[in-house]
Amino acid sequence: MTGTELLLWPRLRGHQLGGHKFRRQVPLGPFVVDFACYASRLVVEVDGPAHEASMRQDALRDGYLRRSGFRMLRFSADDVLQRLDEVLTTILRECSWER
View 1 (cartoon, helix red, strand yellow):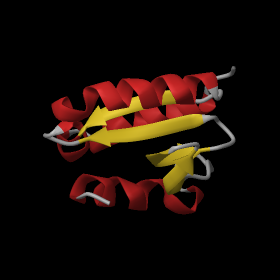
View 2: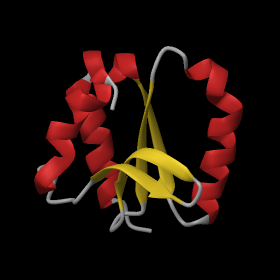
View 3: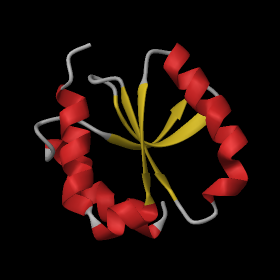
């Protein structure tokens, strides 16, 4: 995990965010995602500074995950570092969203 993922993980693990269970570094099909909440069908990705180089691969992964019934949330590393509470509020809102 990256440094920003290590900052986010303690706030997601152990059902700490609204009682939702998250897993980290989750294999989903041919991809590995940063965090996933299976019950909410939500994937959370933290994009680092070198993200632009992998945007095509990310688009393929996002399409695969959507077809598999997952919703995606992407945050920049800066968002996690500078606005962690807002990031967590957004994740919680999406976990609670009714499909």
